[in-house]
Amino acid sequence: MSTRMYGRWERPRSAGFFGLTWGVSMVGLGLVVMVMSAFLITRSVSISAGLVVGALAVFAPLALTIDGRTGWEWALLRVQFAAARNRGELLYRSGRFARIPGIAKLPGLLADSRLSEYETAGGRRFGMLHIRRSDHYTVVLRVIPRGKELVDQPQIDAWVEGYGQFLAAQSRGGEVVAVTAVLDNVVETRLKQGREVTRLVRPQAPEFARAVMAEAAADTGGVGVRIEARIALTYRAIGKGRVRRNEAEQAREIGQRLQGALSQLARAGLPATPLQAWEVLALVRTRYDLASQRDVEAAGAQLVETQSWDSVGPISHVDRWDQYVHDGARSVTWEMDAAPRGAVMETVLEELLRPRADVPRKRVAIVYRLHSAAEATNLVDSDFRDAVAAEQTERGIASASARIRVGNTQASREEQARGAGLTRFGVLVTVTDHLDGDLPGIEASVKAMSAASRLSVRRCYGFQASAFAASLGIGLVLPEHSSIPKKVSG
Image (cartoon, rainbow, N blue to C red):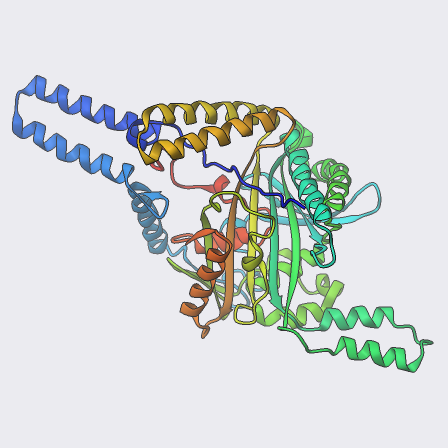
């Protein structure tokens, strides 16, 4: 039996001189022309030398990259972070003694979000999040991955193909901004297990059967970590005029599209159910405040009687340069720096996703940013032209890499012509622990798990709080809120 391989992903990059991007090359060429013109006009060596130094000071930070970011990006990130700290934006206090007593709103990019609940035509209730800053609407689906035990390889291949078809279907209409798949490892409290067993056991059941079920509910074996999987569908505002501005109309439009998405996920081996409003409240509350997990799980659907969307945020938080401190816990988020090189199998991320007792609270979010069919055609053609131009200008080892890129982009054109979608993707890895947790040990574990998954990651410096919120999988798409111009990103 042959093993199916996956890959051929390429980072979009315009071809310029000496391996630089087209934009950086044009900036460099413009600086050279400026220096030459100044010398021809002034005939002064000292003035020309000063302009050369100034041109190098502008060009070098743009051409050189550190951890995937240009020098100008790092400089702007540092300046923006320092400015936010001086304005007091990195420190958040809420709760009973805050300026607005009793309110614990979500901070940062989620501050203007709203949660409401609606019902589909089929009677299925779902919570809908509206982030007004970007005018995005999100529905979160709980999924139950089948696993691979006692499953034949052809069935696994069919599920992977079905998931690709699900992503392609979401991109065709151009209404879905992003699909975020989250695999969340949380500490097991056994409360959900006990409640489910209580629901299943009948009073008239034999005593032995009731004893076995009670023992199963109280079982404390395993690593004490459970997996929660979910998929968030983030839509841009649908329709025009009044429909576009009416939240109820948006819920109706999204509800009509939900059944198709659920059917496609079922064919991919991922039976899904939309989260109701109280479940979204529980999700967000327990991720910001670790101590609330047992109380929230014990409350169940009655949570809406004591909590609202304006009270599930942290009581306090501090957004630091390299970590996020919130309600007695510390979280660190890493982002994908580079996709796995070469072809991989479907199990490539297994080590990163597997529950571990030494990292009990780990969240891996894969963000798919979808292109519409019209955008995909233009982009694959543009990528192919850039790859051909790079192959013609590069020499040596770089030319071998350029030839591979040409083959990959050509394959993308052919697959897109056959109906495949075009997707940008990234990964966020968040680990949360108590304030006295072993942070160096956690970082070493994350790096080891990422390396085993052939994934290159880097810490999210300067935006830890935003990255934490984005990895929750509730509709926050970070590139839509970028504060750094693309012109300085090389």
